[in-house]
Length: 312
Ligand SMILES: [Fe+2]
Image (cartoon, rainbow, N blue to C red; front, side, top):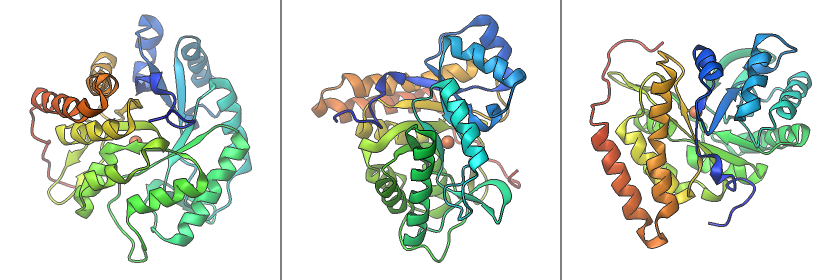
């Protein structure tokens, strides 16, 4: 696949999220890590410890910004103050792209602080795409949008989630952060084939992939980010990079965070798939990636952690 402005940064390899419990380890041990993803909102401040740490990280590592509060799908106008702070941070980090979620989360200036699923309507396509363009034009960095996990759907929807994603990114002319764990979680909650979703994504727009762990409850699956990646998600990941080629990959681990080495080792399992995709001849790609998926599934031969009880 020819490189373009979305999928051309294939040398990014495998990154992990920069998290406070690991600050000390990273700054003192300086481990070799391809790149770190930061939550933009944690560093959109005027000074203090977060920026001090970030500046030390930037001396040695590549950093990519990931946002959690842009709410591209909300009808509220974008906050100019928020965009200014985001742009200031982007200039500091030199992030190659900016990601945030394809969701809504605010009404009339009141914020839910949650990533709520969109109604998949044509009207929402237009509103969302316009806001993505506004952010890109203001911050002057390529924007990529991430599919969220969801637990509810709207009767008003006029298309599937993957059709909605396709329409939004075409109209916005933006990239995609494909979260294969979110696809898997939603596929179980809403009874669709996750491979249909992955197979429908415009591969030439996928700039980054998220992998993560989830938890299985009695009647639904929850996107908990507190486990190693499960075999079913590795299989989806394998299919995604088979279609997209080697793609910047990020392991999300946000709760019950283990040691840095444990998180990093889990993330580096993705390298097996990335190498298979990079080295295989086109006609061999499918077999090579499937072999890696089988090896990974055997390595991680464990049942999905079954739990009962309420979600947090
Ligand atoms: Fe994600």
